[in-house]
Length: 433
Image (cartoon, rainbow, N blue to C red; front, side, top):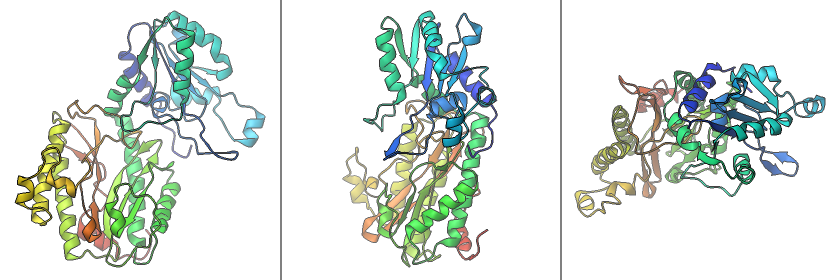
């Protein structure tokens, strides 16, 4: 791994948090992600299952973590199984965890090779009454690809039909919504790396450069600062492309007079940053661009102040919509007749601001969450209002990452230039920092 070693107390804490929510005499079993085939004899770079990582920090394929807090065998209350390495694997694939390294990384004392798993796991399951299964329950995504967790779930249900099977995701979702100080520190590192990339881009962009060249500048800065890479596919969208919300081709030339909308974030130690900035390709906002930019920035700042404990997400998004409505009136993009005749289910402002304002951020760029749970201290949100005007080839989105506390919202990206004047000043430089 490129990232610095992580304090195993983070993973000890997360296992305790999960165990406290388990039913009595239950066992929970978590599998790593598969190595995914790319083409021929090649695989995509490995990325660990977020929840297995959250519970163990073990960042390697063919890993299984077992939690059985009520086990009569005390030494079996936390177990990790890891891939057994050998000289051939070391030569062809490189270093894999030793048992000692897995213990040090995870804080799990009892580590076995995967070829030692079947008999021991069978014994533990027979001792238990309930089995927690980990599956992907992201309501915004489904896949035909069958994960290791799903394959295991099918197998274990056939083998132990008399057991009760329980969902791990409801516990994990509530856990991921509240970040510990350890996690905030890792996310801050991802955001600091993202800042370095953005500042590099500010000094690089000019008329005539290609969107993919800008993407190259971003990944250069990510990799030299120990990031895993991108936390998600980057959006580098100039001119009319900025009005395509999930634009990803990044293959056009940036033209004089255009706005460049960028949405990217580093992934550090599997934790994500998520930043959006909109900058003038020629280094200077036009009067119209500046007016739209200032409107979006005003909404972003006001929305940030609303991220306080006790606020409901539905009420938050409704209030942000009202603020955006006012800005669009000022910009003469909508008028009072539009508002009077609007469909309550599709407000007039949605013509120019189609997406939500905030989502949870953490090990996934869109962390699992429950919308009905009010905002609480420890949550980390994006705040990303935007205005998209296809008829003007103009799209503006501004996005920062905010930690909720009992005192006030803390902007974890506050050091990243966001004021129009600061962006223009940074773009005057011709030498990389």
